[in-house]
Length: 275
Image 1: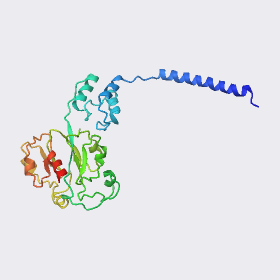
Image 2: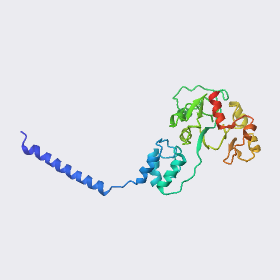
Image 3: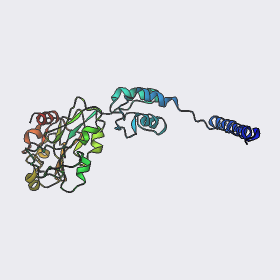
Image 4: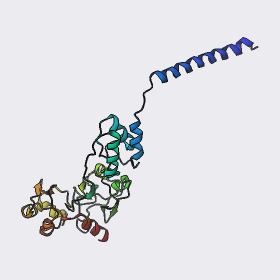
C-alpha cells in the first residue's frame, strides 16, 4: 500500500532540488557571462555569406570573429572584394588595406588531343581519391589536371566546370577565393591578379625531352620567353617558366613560345570550351 509520504515527499524533494539547481545555473550564467563584441555581428552582417573558406577561416562567422578577436586582416574576403574590406575597416576603426583582386587559372593545357590518356579511371569521381592511386590519373603527365571535377564541387560561385578533361575557369564568375586552389591534389590551379593576362599553362617539372613524350603543349624550359621578355618578368625554375608580378602583358612571350604553353588566360579558357 502506497502512503501519502511515500508519494508526495519524494516529489517535494525533487522539486526543491530542481529549484536549487535552477537558481545555481541562473547565478552561473550571470556570473560567468561573456559579452560578445558587437563588432562581430556587424561584420558578419556585411559579409556575403558564401562560406567559401577563401579567407582561411571556417566560414563567414569564423572570419568575423577572427577579425575582431584574432587579428585577422580585414581584406581577406575575396567574395566581398574592396567594398567589404572598406566597410570592415570602418567598423574596426582602421585604415582599409588594399588587395589586388585575383582569379583562378589552370596551369595545364593537357586535353586528350594534346596529352593522350594512358589509363581509364573508373573509381570515385573525385580528384583527391584518384590522385592517391598509382597510375590512376588518366593523363599521361603526372603533373596534369585529373579532370574529375573536385574543384567544381567546392566552388560555391559556379565559376568552374570541366570541359575536354580539364577544369575551365569562368573569369566573370571567379572571385579568387582560392577554394579550388586549396583542394586540387595536383596543384594545377593557381591564383593570379586580375590585371595579369598572361600565364604559363603547364605544371610539369620534367626536362624538355621528357615533357614532349607526354604532352605537345608542355613547357620545355627552353628559356626563349625569359630571354625575350622586355620587362624581365619571366624566369625558368625547376624546368618551368614562371611569370612574375612585373609582367606588363605585352604578349612577347605568347608569340615567342615554341609550344604555345604561354598564352592569354581568357583565350586559353575559351579554346578549351570550343575544342
